[in-house]
Image (cartoon, rainbow, N blue to C red; front, side, top):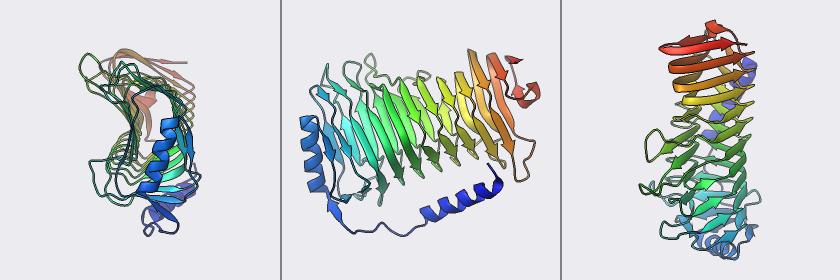
Length: 343
């Protein structure tokens, strides 16, 4: 990416963050929107919202206690503005409660709008199923812009799996753009898996663009497949995958904190690009415990005085790395018992 375009993007992003307050023309308050959404969910239908922007004066929680197929929300370009001033509550929570057993929520979708916090709010959207005996799966989040939440843009918790994010951008949230967390009581932990992310951006978040977490350390979700997604200027890594991840393909990583991707155990990168003027000296920072990593057709670039200084990876522990059309051995810093093969 040319330096001139980088400067343009930075200026545009700063202008967006500094923009004046959200206009109040044609806004609906919480009650009418909540009633309409709850009614459609109860029927297993999608709310085709045509009421303009929505100002939430209280958090919305939808609990699903019986099998449900295909509910959702189409905002049709509207903004959902969280304005209830409670950093401990999220704007919308879709939840299967722990006491509800053998419940399946399938095919849920939320699409075509913007979520923004006008006063402190924890997350924009949370999908929760903190048990391994119920399932929230085959969900889709599409064409969404999410910003200014205290914690995460999106928070996925427990048995929330086989899901897709299409063209979802999470910017300027206090912690992560997206968090995927294995969670639930010991012996009944819900597992996040089979996640596909297509396009979108994770930009200027307070820690990572995407982070995997777990109630039990070192058992974080790792079945993430990420394609053509851009991670830029997050204060921590673009992707923080403590137990590794399945695949990143055609993704971009620019000026994140320390590295584009921080991982352990395993990871596969195809045709990913990384660039920095200093803050992101490595595309990948990894610790392997008998695992392996692949970089295939990846590219790196330093600019703004950092030309020739960026490297593909810093790797420690025990394991192997294969560089295929991704630089040479001099572009990787290794320690401990790491084998590097160049193809």
